[in-house]
Image (cartoon, rainbow, N blue to C red):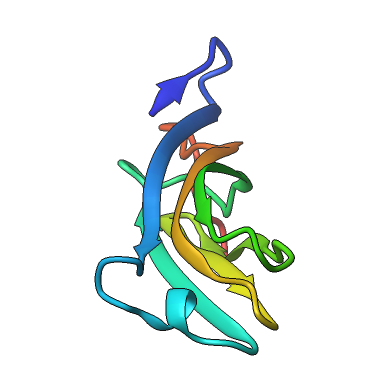
Length: 116
């Protein structure tokens, strides 16, 4: 995790293979209709609260005779991680997807204390 000069803000980034279905004949490559894959990502250290997470596709390997249909989103974001969710539908055929991610958020601070 990178700490900015403000010690309460952290940035962490990475890249994750969400799936590779071409070699195994998985449903993203061979199926039709609505399909979804989830991939859990854990941060190197916990944020103080759920961070903002930005995703982008860093690799896509898709068959091009049909329309390319894709939805990429971060769900279930917590201070310790999140899930990358990739969805496709209809006759789109997806061999592989890799996602790049960037999380920015508040970090725990040594002077924090909880008053109840």
